[in-house]
Length: 292
Image (cartoon, rainbow, N blue to C red; front, side, top):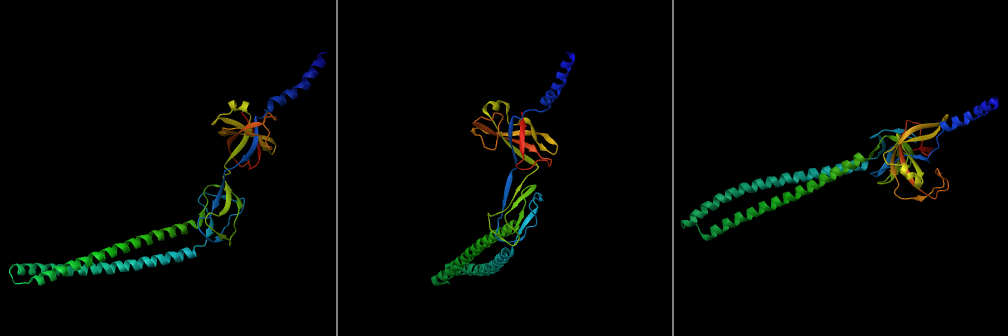
């Protein structure tokens, strides 16, 4: 009798041990990454696009170079126009200086004639003539100054246009926005790029997001900012790491066909996102489990 009891306990121990070692997952889902679509900001032929799909990209790394020949020629034309305007301004400034010297002479002549007129030695016509010459010269100086101001405004406009061209030249060297992996290339070297057109898609693989679904009666166990256990398939069975709940959907949705929750017959579920640090073991699309 004792022998039979011991045999029964011996056979029961493996099942008890397995139940203690394997925890039942509370939610299931797939890993995804924050994908970024990098687009062109200038137009032209792509003269360099060296990284290949799957390559590691660094932040601010120049990944795509677009031909800037036309932009350079446009800048040369604008700078030439700016120099022409500077020459015109110099000419007008010289005219204003000459006119002011002439005005000083006329002002002295006017003072002399005014004194002669008071003494009866000059006629009213002489006084009117000198006053007219002074007024005319002042009007000419004002017109020249106004013309000079207008040219200064044109020069400022050209300067803004030159800065715009410089900005387009800088943006012709497409820089990677963040560290990550090049997922898909949409353009190749030699093809034309236009502003807003996608060049490639990349993703930050250092941090992945496990999107999973929970039922309504599990919501009390899920809190934003809470740490959870994350389990995924590894080379030798399940591997485990930790994650942080970053988002819980405020509204319910129908169960996705590819997702099974803890209760398979639940019709409405809530999506959650768990942020998981990736040490290289996790891949986009890999299934994962969450244990609260």
